[in-house]
Image 1 (cartoon, rainbow, N blue to C red):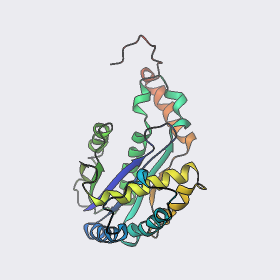
Image 2: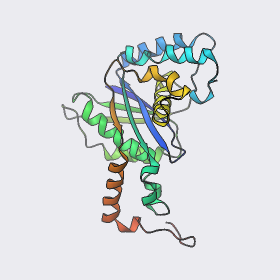
Image 3: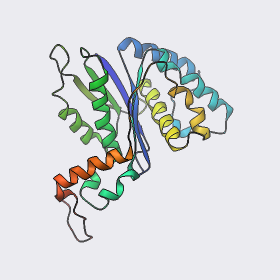
Length: 241
């Protein structure tokens, strides 16, 4: 059994969106948690990327200590990155707009990457922090992928769980990874991107996808052509079911 912890970054806008995390077995996660606690230091229990003070030297040193830990413990990075503005003009003001949020496309890519890149004999447990806006759709993707099986005929995706924020230290590496990937995608020369670089310097090959905008546009065009009812622009007085 492998466990994957995921977090997201940038989902609240139409620019870059990232869903990212790490996957590994129980021993690897246990080792990661132990080293992570030590690297945080005695006065810090949690890492919240958005709350860090980005002009403080201690922030740079903290991130440099933490970044290599998941890789050194044998965990594998998994991520999906895209830019909503690459296709937003095709869906703006239509029923399809709600169905093509960047977070959803990233999740689809994550499930696909896990099937293609994890050992055939390993089942997978998925863990996300509570995210009320997307939990229903994420559970739907889980149900849609139940047909995948391990080499022994068991269900590949064993469970999907949503845990309260700060209820597990094991979500923190994923928060860091998602934030770092977003900063590098936005501006690799920014201070935040440079200070977060250590968690992106894999010692083990990562897997997933950084989406090409044209590829997403083609997928959406084909889908809207097949289901034209989702492409109809919604007028102000129209009712949306």
